[in-house]
Image (tube, rainbow, N blue to C red; front, top):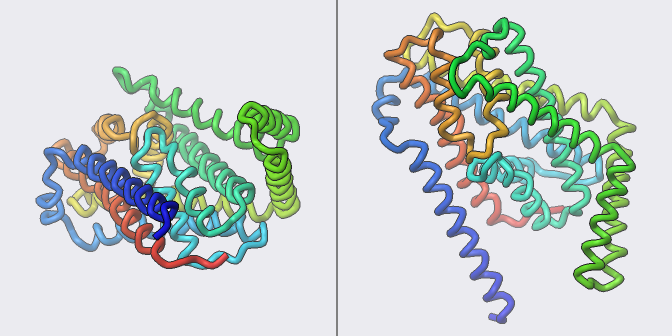
Length: 338
């Protein structure tokens, strides 16, 4: 075995070791001191399975949105590839602060499948834009239908929703500028060329960089001409988030809160999600639980609130984290076709 192959093998092993360690740490911190087995024993298994199914469809919706843009760019994406990119997004987002590792992780696996970095980056930015737009829409609708109850929360959490809402709007504005504004695209070209000059890279690399950016702009032009694609992505993101927010409703019924209404959970969960999704914590751990207790204090009996919160968090975060990691490992073994 050559030295280069040995080095690549060791780096890959180290990479998997670090990811495995980070995963175990996140799961440990998430379940520390929690009796999830006892909660599952006392829960209605059919409602729990319905919640798990909702998260499975959530992952498929994410993959569908990714495949739409890639197909627009001319790639034939199999279902296995689609799910691999979806798993990568959820897995790396869950173990990194503010979910910042999701897109880089997806880019890594797309590059391994020989997809152009410009097309991959454009696809992921479009998928993120549709997701953010859906999250803000549902969050604002949730606040309106709850008659602004989120603004009456006491303590430090009273400031979290306005901050989260502003951050999500800023992300949407930035993505729109990056994807469809020529001036900002030129600004990033200038930064890239300056970086190439500082590092002293060969002239051929400068040409490759410009060609990649030209491919990126071409993909943006394709999306402008096929606006229906983004509309479909937006609808899919809405379905995706509604399923995600419904997990709490399903888990509450599994524990025995049969009086809880689905729409009440949807508007409450939408407000909570937009409040904590952009905070710099892996999976928004800690603050999600605190916000959960505040948002649902008047909706779920205090004797059941802890169990509902634990089961909901297990189904919507911990279990998908494990399954996405295992699915990603299994799908990465087989070579994918371009």
